[in-house]
Image (spheres, rainbow, N blue to C red):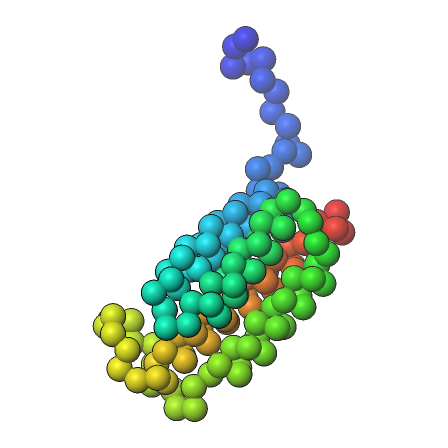
Amino acid sequence: MSFADYSYSPNYSPFTITNMKKTLSAIFGLLFILFAALQYNDPDPEVWIPIYGLAAVACFMSYAGMGRWWFFAVMGVIYVVAAIYQWPPKFEGFLFSEIGMRSMNIEMAREAGGLAICAVIMALMAGLMRQTIRR
């Protein structure tokens, strides 16, 4: 079979909503597993490992085409509410230049930031799941 035997189809595109959903779902699912693993030495891993683990499971559900778009939207809203609740009384930054924790406000800001990342990704998954349903 030569190169000339392959026909070009102007309708084919590797950048479909389904391909993008699968790629992003797999990437963020693996990242959330990494986030959960990094919580092992956290002062309260029993809280944060399930939080990131649930986000990873949701991403893999999206990858497999399981779940409705509203499921991911509800999860996103829950993560937003949790991030607002977790926000520190006095914001002192995230302080990524140091490993140690200078104050509890910095730790709370980091935790709220992690919840906000989960919320954004769940909103993205909801949007991508809704797009694949419409097609």
